[in-house]
Amino acid sequence: KSFVEEYVLFMGDLHFGSKLFLEENFLKFIDYVNCKVPDTPEAEKIKYLFLVGDVVAGVGNYPTQEKDLKIIDIEEQFIGIANLLKKIRKDVKIIISPGNHDGVRLMEPQPLIDKKYAWALYDLDNVILTPNPSSVNIGATEDFGGFDVLTYHGFSFPFYNNTIPSLMTS
Image (cartoon, rainbow, N blue to C red; front, side, top):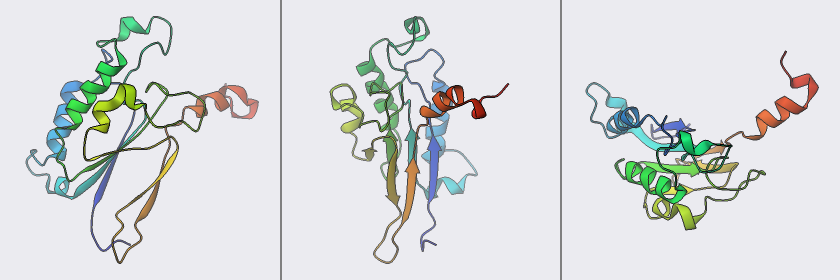
């Protein structure tokens, strides 16, 4: 057990840039993390936010995707999500791993999100970018080794579910 009580949040599949991105709800979430929601004292203990894949909608992931996009440029999508994430208080570490919509190869393991397109995320001091899957240690102190957290977006699950007969559902 840790000697310090800290909270961790996990999210995935934000798909920023999609017409279906829930921006109003995400802004409410940011208010919560920033301790601006009444009667939520636990929010002060949030120290880590894991975003495990598909932080942006990407471009060209499936035929006619452009009709589903509000922002049709992947670099602009990363700039937009970075602008939202920079509103989160700076003592919260934001750990981001890629998914199949984030402009990285589909084959796993997936590399870091490319700085060429996601430079805006790289510019945020409290953001840590990792490959997918990844093991991240959090909460370590001089007297405590911390917790190892495995992050995984899970894109290969549909492949195996649709390929291995014993896993297929009828």
